[in-house]
Length: 74
Image 1 (tube, helix red, strand yellow):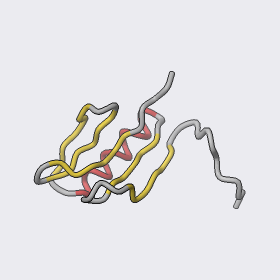
Image 2 (tube, helix red, strand yellow):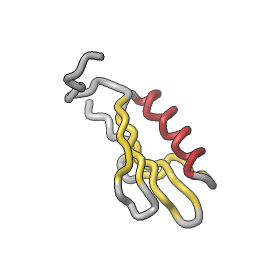
Image 3 (cartoon, helix red, strand yellow):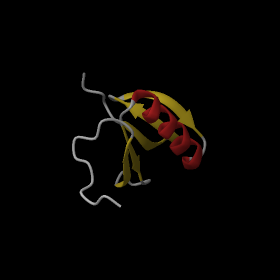
Image 4 (cartoon, one colour):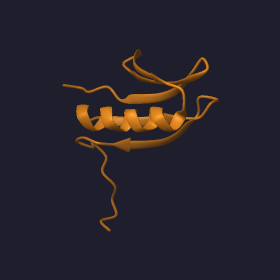
């Protein structure tokens, strides 16, 4: 089963977490939205994508079976 990533994005006067285009949570601050998005990504074992206010992707974290794991084994 393909698990859709969770995106933390600006929404109106706050921030939202969306999965598959559907809003799964809404928050007043980006920090709260990131924290909840991380929790949900871990729960669903998927990727968490964090965006800036302008929509640009800032960071991606994978909490599941990563199809492209990092090559360095530190």
